[in-house]
Image (cartoon, rainbow, N blue to C red; front, side):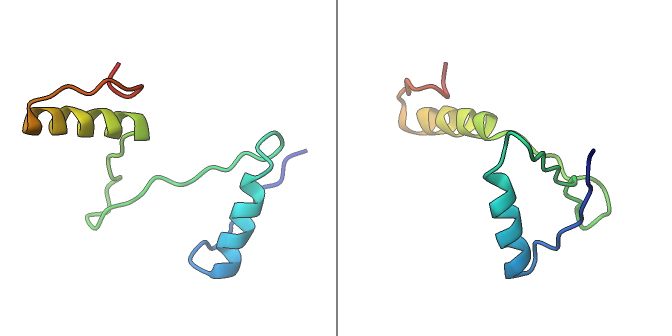
Length: 73
């Protein structure tokens, strides 16, 4: 059986409930809605890994060096 709940994460109690649920990854699956921009269209997002990869590339170009870590491979 599956239960669907809507939690208002703009309140401290809502954020606390979500943090508690995130601790139980084996049995709880949390789905976050797509962020909507001011124009009413979905906001384009990228993963943390892609963001880190782009950041290290930009810093490398800026400072004339290359970074060797898990994000640049």
